[in-house]
Length: 546
Image (cartoon, rainbow, N blue to C red):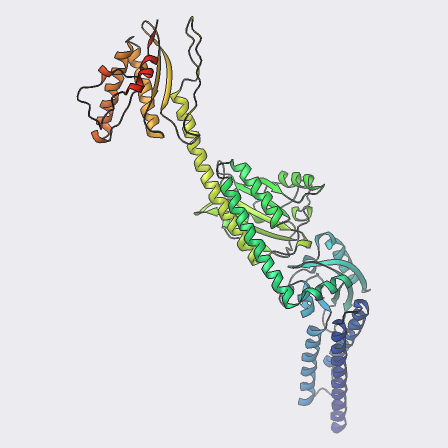
């Protein structure tokens, strides 16, 4: 009896070995046929699925209990292990992209052809939702079909696009159930690119084509870096809002399909972001999409908010959470509303100061972002942050200069009875620095006086001297109607202040229009400069009007 059982087991092992050997030969033949120029993808797919069914049947029989008795000899165990290894190798090497899914739609297994189809390393798709590999417009349909096949057990075929770094690949997806004894049912997906896609893919897979593509991508990125740097330099003196809009427009034209810029609320909560601008493709519905994005403020759990608070970039080649960017007012995920298939979000930071977050989106046809794109986006965002810092510093100085300049010149000229007075002032500096020019009309005991003056230098130091001179003239003229006496008194006040605040050799004050006799006889060259002949016009301008 034992001898008969052993003979039967050896016969079954030889039969399984013969079947697996034949299966391996047929799979090799299919692989060779798939590489032929005139290969028919549909027939190859049907043949590959038939061979896969045979492999599943052989795998099930390998796990079945022994028909006679419960003991298994060493040769039987070795044959079963070898069969499993062989079937695993066949699954990996079959020339059709295969995905093995669980009931929840998560990829449990993906062979080498599937990894090549989505442009990723082997094992990349494992653990991800299969619909995250599908173009956004077809995800809902694919979800429904997966649920229907899992519920009814009936096979189904649909057309959709799978995308990766090289863009979108239109495929025929065949879905069927796989029953494994002692385990949950699985879904088997076989994806075959269309004839045109397959032909183009074979034409581009050569070494020369790959090298050209790499060089072309590097050249495009270098051109983008140059364009970004040039734009930021040219807009260093522009407004921050204008710079951000032009920056977003440039990246939307060169790197991404959509660009969203969120800035930190420095006046309120610095951790809270405000949506500043959005740029996208030149399409008819782009305006409505921009309005929807601008109306949705970044939520605290959104990717831009997380990036801005942590300072760490996020790259999602196949985002599974469609609400990663937030939702519109109507509840639609922004990622789907913009047709985004890939998301890249980087912080806008420089010198340890965060100014917001930069979000880049690509459609499925444009391909996924890579590490080189991440480096480019981080560089551009850092340069943008430095430009924002310079612009805000310049704006603060300009505002301070304008406020200081406004305090030096009269807001409105006082009306003088019987005389029509008008003034025009063109400062020698543009915005960021205050000049030393000033003029004023003031009342005197006998009527009215006009003062026109200039302080050597520019900036805040010159402005402080100008303010002191103007106010000194006003105070002295309140009780003295003589212009010469007023200027002499103002000069003495200025020199006394200079000696008190600065060393004599650093005090260089000049009061325009001061008569020659008002200067102290011991005034040294380092303290004050006597009026030149060209100052006579200014002296005549500071006269008394009665």
